[in-house]
Image 1 (cartoon, one colour):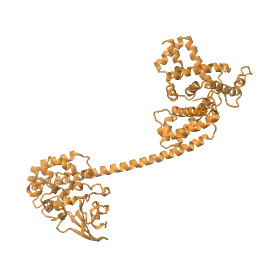
Image 2 (image 1 turned 90 degrees about the horizontal axis):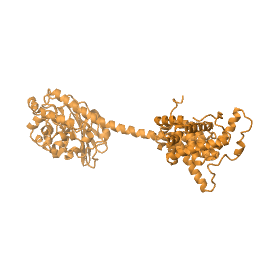
Image 3 (image 1 turned 120 degrees about the horizontal axis):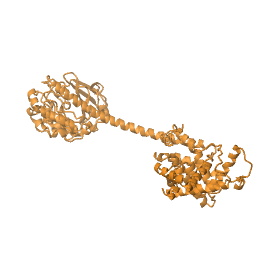
Image 4 (image 1 turned 60 degrees about the horizontal axis):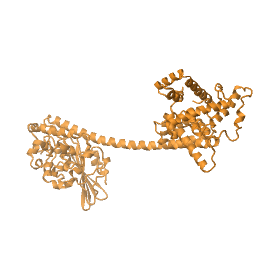
Length: 208
Length: 387
């Protein structure tokens, strides 16, 4: 089924030839991924909404300059990433900086509340509902540069070499950050009481 | 593989970014090395856990705005493509026109030669030369290319023709191979453009007094359409509108040139192709080359019509060949102070092969207009239009 799906690059080529439907297919395919990346990178859903829209608008405008050899996935995430970095820079310049690694969202319960390791075992749906904020908290605990690499590699599926290009970082550094991120996540998950064996399916579905 | 190296590669191995050979080496090491095995398992477990975090859904509605922008951009892209395609179509049309011009010229050449061969028992293949082809060919076969018209009074004896046939053939071949793609349009500006050599021209040239002996003289050039003949006043401004059709610009030989003053004289044995050359106009023309304007026929035209145009009368005369086909049309528009004279030549197939402004007339444009160039000989006569 997946094999029969039209590739991102093919859709992009069709869009450039004037097929708006092809771009809408790309949006359906990647909109949640781009939004999630921004939301988890920034730790701010509202900003992520804005920047996500901006990412797609920018992609439409830049479509004529997109090179067919470039992977669409890498391209769209690099647009999103650069917008996030610019936005963070602007905010920090204005003195209203919200650190990218601020954990949790405004209004979320403090992380301690999630440490319900000794609560009675909930049913599966409840477990999933409880797991999600803990995983997000684990991500949020990562330093920004590690989180960025982890999000791009694990969820966005961008290879290390391309992450290096997107972030302007040497490839060995990118891989080191990934190793640190994985180690830090492991520790954090343990601290949050999420065991490695705790395989609870996420109701929102899995990443591709 | 060294432990440090393998351990460094574990992350890449887990994400499938190692080349197969390296991946096998790292895997092998990890199986044997307890530390690496544990590390690999830890990475895999962390990934399994983290991947349970599915994508976060953005607020609904935003995709409609994106879709609208995409449609707008797609419409612009289509527009650009359409314009681009239209540009391509225009380009293709121009290319096709140029090809057609070349093709028609080529066919005319081939046909003409074919007919000549037939008519003359293949004794003296016509040495045809157009524009620059003629220029290229002529040095190799000057006698063939030079003499514009065989004196019709003395039809070339087949034997004499045969004697010179090789040379004429050479000229034809040379002309052909010179540049097959040379379009008639390109042929125009050739300064050395020489009238095509007519069948049996070589012997004719020998027997004819003046013209044959002055091959390079512009006197023989007036037959060429376009700037090629510029030395001769007659062809001073024969710029032909491109719309006039493919066959124009074809530097036609003398037969098309001088209206046949002495029709049906001593040329009965010739094919219709030779017919326009009947009479001795070329001789006369060559003898008085500088007076190209005065080279208009003295013989009575086969057809003569006069149209009342606002500036003055338009007189159209036409000469037919033995088969009754119109081969030459002279169009004279009278105006106070002079006459604008246009000469049109047609081949046996009724195709326009020459269009020449002999005299622009008082204050007249020095280019031909569409109205003055009729692609069809009958239209040139009965459908003549006022400027």
